[in-house]
Every structure is written in C-alpha cells, then in structure tokens.
Length: 92
Image 1: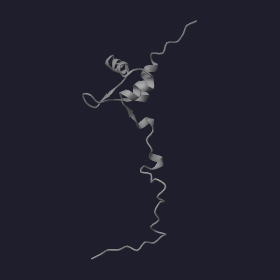
Image 2: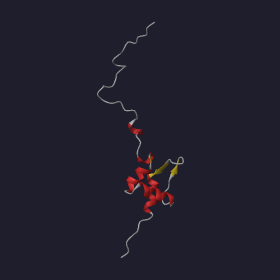
Image 3: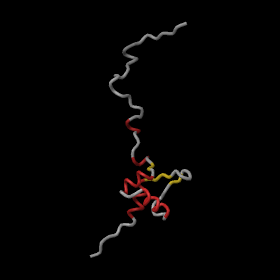
Image 4: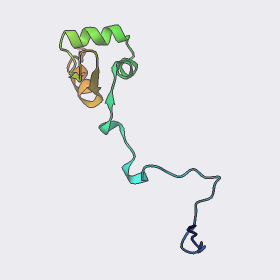
C-alpha cells in the first residue's frame, strides 16, 4: 500500500532553499540578560586574566553561581555591579 499526498501550491508553500529557516522566533532570541557567562567570558569582559577572576571569586569580591565542583557561571550584570563598588573617585 502506497500513500501519496497531492501538493497544493497555496497550502504547502515551502521556504526557498537559498534562505535558512530560523529555528527560534525573532522575538525570543536570547540576549545578554538571559545568558550566564563562564570564566573566560567574565575575564574578557573585565579585561583581566582567568586566574585573576578566580582570585576575585575566592576573595568573594564577585558573585558566582556554582553548578558543580568545576562548573562555575556568572551573571554579568551582578558581576559588573559588584566590580563598580570598588570605584575610587579622585579627591581634589
């Protein structure tokens, strides 16, 4: 037994092959507020080494989310807020 379907061009319109089909709706694209950063992302954002970020975590200067023994993630907004607390204003 063979099943066949009659294609109706109005109902079964396919996207052109030359254009990629989006997998996520454009209104639901992830932005930086939903993104948890890893150690390398934080080091790149602060323009310091990964070792120095580990030192800041050990001193409890910046907040960290521990997902396991070796898996650490950071919320960049909270990290930047914690780092800005150490801003030194010049006195004249």
